[in-house]
Image 1 (cartoon, one colour):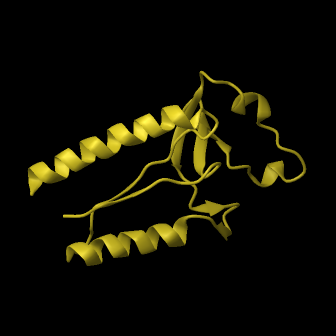
Image 2 (cartoon, one colour; image 1 turned 60 degrees about the horizontal axis):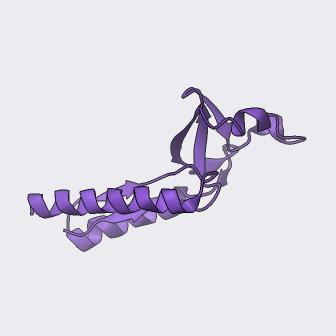
Length: 117
């Protein structure tokens, strides 16, 4: 079985302040100046949410490509829902550390899929 892992681009992952309040992407309230800069710069209280599917509730960012990737995964595996995972990350951090997390994640997923085959 083949799977797809989607990694959003820089600034393409939602960031949450204290695990509850979305501070990235900006909201309608930020159109005339981003108001969450202090929170965005806080390294201790930021967690990663999901890939940003839609911006400001009207502009598609990753929604369409994720739908397509899910369909491709299902098609190549001849199943209704193919293995597809989105791996958002904290794009403010050094990409070297994020690449290590990605490598570990891919290794674990690959091992899991091989065990199930």
